[in-house]
Length: 154
Image 1 (spheres, rainbow, N blue to C red):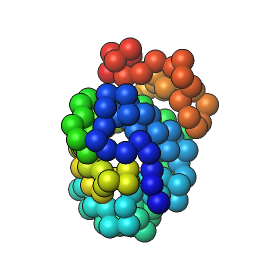
Image 2 (cartoon, rainbow, N blue to C red):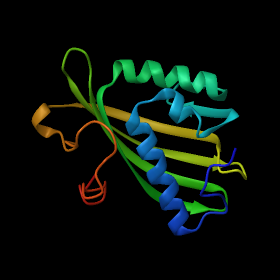
Image 3 (spheres, rainbow, N blue to C red):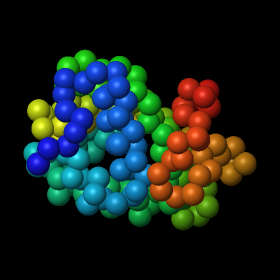
């Protein structure tokens, strides 16, 4: 299976890869998102270390059961060869109604077939009031005309 765009990345193809990842995560479909990773992909996500698609899928299912009304924006930071670095922010609420905004950075490494083989994420979050939310599009893909992180000064 191949997942274009393929490395080595140009500025344009790196941006395409970042948007595809954002769109996948905004689907909140663990099985769909897990297919973007190699069978033996390794992750570091905060203090969890999922290995392989099945653990990634289980991790995402747990995540989105807790993080309700999840909306994510990713932005390209830099790229070189088969690696891409992104910055991100996402908003969600918990089951008590408390809203949060998370900020993070991810380092990605891709196999030649365009599947991600390594993901290293550093993420911090903070509670926010509902009126402080910035991500208001309907659940799913962020509309093309919705501002990105830089436009929102995040």
